[in-house]
Amino acid sequence: MKTVTAAILTLNDKILIAKRKKGDVLEDKWEFPGGKIEPGESPEQCLKREMMEEFGVEIEVKDFFCSSIFRYQHIEIELLAYHAVYLQGDFQLNAHAEIQWVTNEELMKFKFSEADIPIAQKLYEYNIS
Image 1: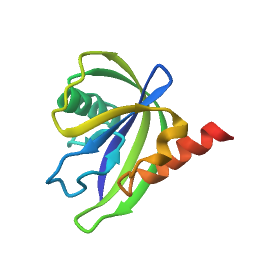
Image 2 (image 1 turned 60 degrees about the vertical axis):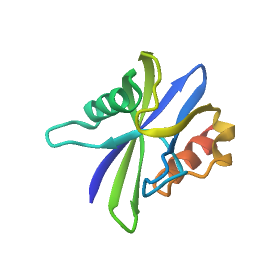
Image 3 (image 1 turned 30 degrees about the vertical axis):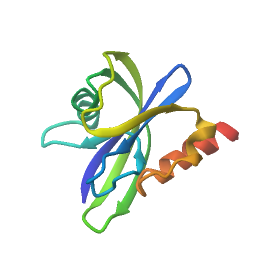
Image 4 (image 1 turned 180 degrees about the vertical axis):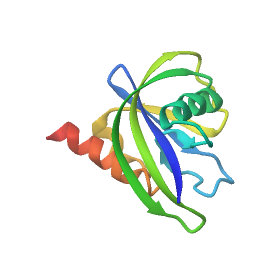
């Protein structure tokens, strides 16, 4: 099982979601951005590195939110989601087709990758409870 991170990056009460590029195994699906943890790297360090690599932005990683385990055909992952805050940088699309800033209420309108669905559902339910 591979451990992967996801940022619940918020700015002005909206959450960043990113759409996978064409040609990707999970193309056209939305996700909370992040990536695979490298050897010797903490989940927090991974998120900071991935957000810089994928978008050219600096973030501050906050508290752990939840995890999700899912077995895709090509890999089984444990996805660790952390709250994060945007610090600086101009967003670039280095690894995704598109990004959107959405409210909790809008999350369920998007077709998320399977490992990200429980995170989106929990964020949505948190907002309506």
